[in-house]
Image (cartoon, rainbow, N blue to C red; front, side, top):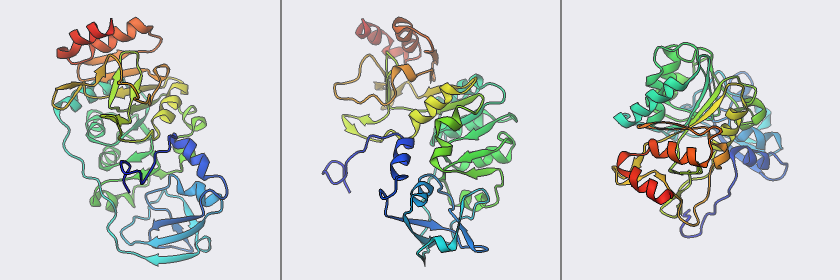
Length: 329
């Protein structure tokens, strides 16, 4: 399928909104899901518990693909065997995500984020090298929890070294083969559906919930573009706004937008005076708390338009600060 050729279209929905859609009876007719080998009259949902439970609870028919490579995670939801219409066996390799080594810019951003986290915080992170850098920067902490939509290799390392001894809640796991092999015995990891991982009622009840996400660019008013790249839809909304609003509703919580100040090896500023016409706003300026780059921290909470402009220019790459100042006027 190709978006540019018109073979697939974009459905602009947040994670929780899409979950509510497929939770309506009749919207999804059939769910085909890869599962681990059954045990004791039931089968686990493996490493992907996010959307499937909503469609299954709404009455969708269910086919299970039994794959011995799929871990039977201790904290994953389980279903009775008679809920499935049929089982088939598969030996396909599970999708893998190999993360690279964080660069020094990511590590600078990660250290700044680590300094912002209050004692006893519950953290949400996206995937990628920045996540790895943040987890590395948290080494030595023993007071944290994790509540997010997706985890990868670095989270399991941090869990085993004690940073997240309060436990981990996630919807999906995506990583290396060795990561999958170790996940089956990780008792502190709970896999949960979207209404629990992203739901505002859940997130607002977590004290000191801090979400950390990245974007493609941010303009000087605080509006965020996380979807359009060179005028083309590059990604969807995902669960970012769900987490941001949940963090802002949490007692002592906050949302952090973290990203390098430039792209294309320093040729392009990711902090811009204004988005090009037609660029969608992924996160409204009223939803932004803190922006972190390798050059500093811009606290936009209760900041007026001039304060926002000045604080964002201060964390932009120095080479672009004069032009940003001129364009903002």
